[in-house]
Length: 154
View 1 (cartoon, one colour):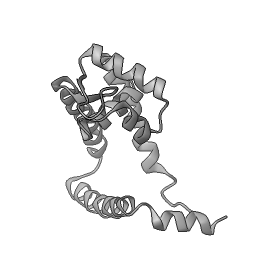
View 2 (tube, rainbow, N blue to C red):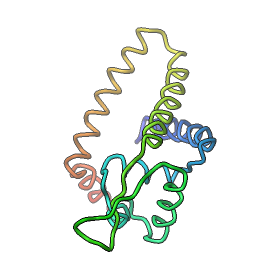
View 3 (tube, rainbow, N blue to C red):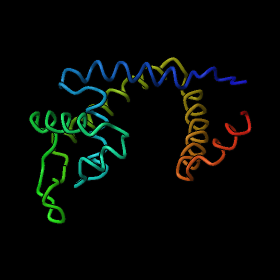
């Protein structure tokens, strides 16, 4: 039984909804932001590699990259290793967008946590760090524990 009742997911979803709504002012949607995030993490990436990472359709990625380039969020350079492809790089504008997203999320979480006193906030942050560390370790290992748990329930 999930005693959290998936409330972490529900809070994250509400923060995400608000963030996306706020970011639309910059003319960037969720899928485009995910694409920018990949390019920021992997500067000099090709569209094919983006498709593989995001599990996205080649046509959709081509359309999004063209749109983001026209908006000034990324730039292209010829791929010296393969004349048929281009390398994608983030621009300063995409970096400021990342900071904007982080600022929106931080503001939302600060507001949310303001209902707790200082001691409760510190304890919540400590417990959250325990969960975050466990989650990150599982993710980096390729989710072996989660795969075993799901397999054992079949």
